[in-house]
Length: 171
Length: 316
Image 1 (cartoon, rainbow over the protein chains, first blue to last red):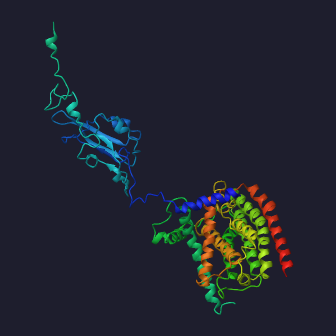
Image 2 (cartoon, each protein chain N blue to C red; image 1 turned 90 degrees about the vertical axis):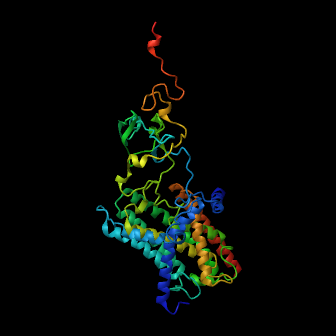
């Protein structure tokens, strides 16, 4: 009997407590930097696309919402001809980001993607590409990778020794 | 003390009772939110007050479906009964001196009789739905309301003994020196508990017990028929709060403010108490509810009646 009255009293005391509701549209919730929201494609510090169209994100995606087509430019640099993410399927698991070898695909703390038509949730490369390096400011895949492209021969990457001339090793 | 313009007071009472009952939907949600550290509906209109209008429009637009397996006439009749009995009880409620629709000399008995009739609504709804959960809810409601009604009536007899009348305005007038809550404190507590059970509010909401019985007796109801059960429940809450005010807390009596304001303030306070109880207490087991009613509350009510009777006899 006393415990019932005590319960009622404790509930009544909540009248004077601060409400914990975040009044969303006026008051934005705090989202951690690593929050998994809208997916973007980032660029190198010198402005080139980071994506090398390796398909690893498309393979890692558990709901198969990523579609892309690889191609090469005149310098031999691989890039996606198109890159399409269907956000009406995406479950924001972040596996694509984990799979990406070049930090190109990244998830951002933005979730306000409501649309009235399903079709508008299919984002093309134009919608996905941003003009910055995202979470990894200094990183440039083509400058550290050993692969040869136009303007950068073998052995010219950062921290890379010049290739050994195998003929010089002959006895 | 009946008003010279009966139509005016009837319409006023009807409008007032229904407005308060509708407003309670908003008040209950806001207060529950307050006690759970939330905001509740605060978007539609000032403080979310127009939420009531939005809910009303929505519930009128809803499909009013009658299940093919239901007993159709009874199914339609049941929600009407609860509204009817709840609204009829307001006829004998003295809001302020002179503001009463009908000053029956047996007003208190009239209210008790109508609240007993209210059981029919719930039982018939449960029966005619032809659904096992609805039937279980209806049966629980019948058992609960009948057994809690017994000491509900008895708990009020102390007040009647002291006031010497069944007429509600006379009972209010008898409290000019001292509110009956002080000499009849036990009666007040018993009536509060019985009132909770009578209006089927938590913790006595076993007839609808949504965690066990879907929605109990109104599982099969939709649209405005469900809305009528809802409004009927809120009318019941308003009525019981008003009855507590009239019987134990001096009705319209109070200093400075006009009598009707005092009446409304006191009623609102008890409505808030009902909501506070809902916010804090869980539902008891059904057999405990029954044995509590018959083995604890009924003897207490009888003892209260006997002691009051003896004291009143000795006094005179």
